[in-house]
Length: 422
Image (cartoon, rainbow, N blue to C red; front, top):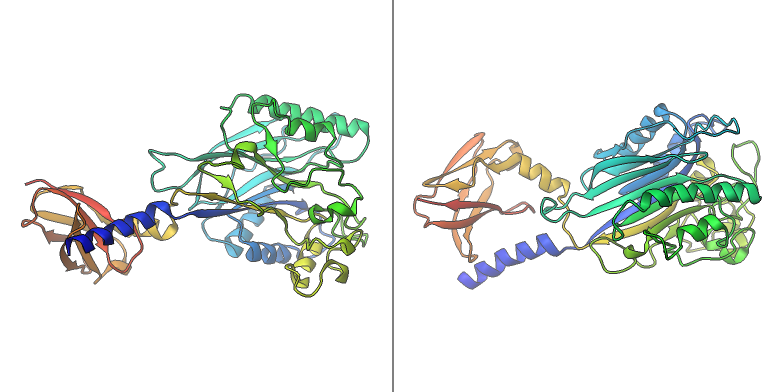
């Protein structure tokens, strides 16, 4: 019985510390939201998109104002999780001498049960800010073993030509100057509308420069000359439309402007890494027939295609860009919402006890529940039943001095640890 008890508690511990967690990321150009109103009620389309993909991190650009930012927050809470939060909305601080009012902001939305926002940094450029967010995974041992990641959200200068390419390059140099202040092993994720036509452009080469303090990689592995090249249709993100009058571009599917890049160290072994082959342009079925077509056309899907017409139609209606997605993974255990609720609703008044154990019950879900006590060897010591009192006393006078674990039988939560000292 002692061996069985030990393996029972060991299994519970193993499950709590070694489960591999996955985290879904989406970057999306929202197309002048909410000022662009050529397509009415496009919030419904965004809700449909987010409800389908369910990202844990949602990176956006082309937000116009705080009203739009709050609208998107409410949509994430409805479509994904009520635990979604957003970073601080800040209007663009960069100076554009060309006279563009630059009401195009970046922002980060995140599942607050999985991420903790630690810092928000603005890196100004000659046109638009880089908005950088320092996040920490909300793990069960984050106090002693913190896992941090920096998320960069950006929107580089649009349009072709040498002058615009130079401005994109100068913007990236400002980002590099900031990244040089971070430890070289920092995990960094970059999501943005880079407006880059080919991998040979200086801005993209600068991001991938292996002499950088933080070197980025294209996790899709699709480096090349993308513009109007059907060989790269699988990573095209613009334009979703051929019809004019909807706002944004209308040239059909022919460019790779939107990216999620990872620092190179996220492609290797680490505490948070890119899941191989998880990079996806959401809504893009990778069909060469889709080249120069609208994303909701019959040319952009065949029987069995991943992205069906309702999804592609919602994407077509909401923006002239497609979102980009990927998945991260970590071996750490996240302190999920059920465990948070459990810890708030069922806890110990103190960990050091003598003859009586005081349990605090703040939720009816823990009334009349079976609880077991195990010793440090995993031997089952005793069972008891909770009642409906806010504070409940359990007799432990017969327990010897040492460490014990309290386990709620019907709940998947971390055992509560207490010490008996007579």
